[in-house]
Image 1 (cartoon, helix red, strand yellow):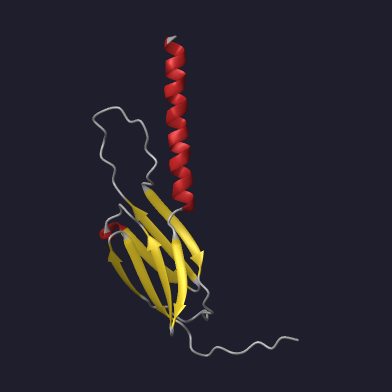
Image 2: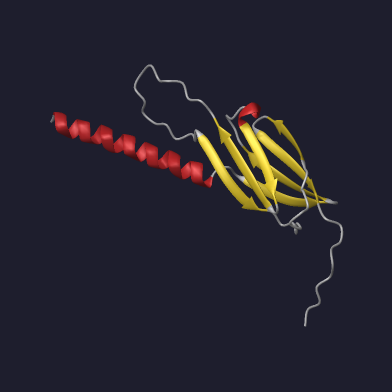
Length: 129
C-alpha cells in the first residue's frame, strides 16, 4: 500500500516537471503585426519581473529570455506548471543585412512586453507570373 502511494506521488511529480518543460518550450504567446512603418511584437510574460526579461535582436532573429526565482514551498506541492525560465528565438519578418543593426523600443505593462521595431523602407513589389 505504501509503495503505491509513493509511486503515484513520483508519477505526479514527473508529470508536473514535463508539463512545466512543455510550457517553457511553447511559451510565451507572441503576436506580430505591422503598423505603419513598424513591426509591433507583443509578448505575454505574466509573472516575470521587468528586470528579469532580456530581448536581443541579431539579424532577423529575436531572442527572448526570462527567468524567475521560485520560493521554496513550505507545504505540499500539488502542481507547479508555471514556467520558471523562458528561452525562445523567433524569426522576424524583416530583411536585415549582415552588418546592419536592428534597434527597437520595448515597454512592459502588466506582464506584457510590447516591442516596436522600425521596418525597412525599401520594399519592392514582386511580380506574379
